[in-house]
Amino acid sequence: MLHRFLITLGLMLAFTIPAQAITIEELTSQPQFKQVSQFVSDIPNVDERGASYIDVNTIKVIGFEPPIYTIKATVYKAYQWNDEKVITVKDMTFTYDSSNSAASKIYRAQQQGSATSNTDVDTDATMNEDMWSNPGIMRDEEEISRFDFDGTPRPIHRGAFLRRPVVKDSLNKEFYDIADAVYYEVYKEHFDEVIVN
Image (tube, rainbow, N blue to C red; front, side, top):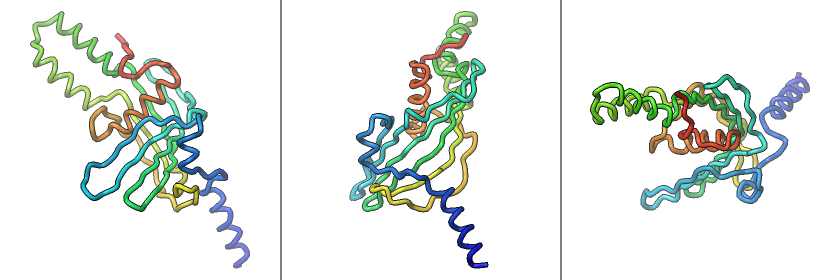
């Protein structure tokens, strides 16, 4: 019975810890890892900082039905809070609706503005509401591993976040930067700039 338990435990660990650990040196020096965002906290007496990277070798289009595009990538976040230093590895899937990109929305608002007598204030208010209610990008993510900066495996937080909007605002800037970088790697165009009539 104990033998069977140990075999089961070994199999569980084999599926939760990847074969290849990652270190902070690899993230910052290997060309396949592209840094796409960073932050430093402005809280006094707190050393909080972080950066997000995409592994460009993992980017793949998994859905192509214009104006909807779905792209998957592996994302690494190196995070430091005082002495705590962690790298999280997540599979992220972004679904882009280019008919709801910022450029598409601006184009449609301009077309409606020239056809009606709306004031600029009304158009701006409608645009702001539309940007929040339908950002054009949704994300799904699942943490697949976690390491110390030296590559030592750490326990991961189970669970996936499904269907969250990626809004271009100060609270979501990191996710927006990641989503935009993934889109750019595939299509060589920033998502904001895509226009669908």
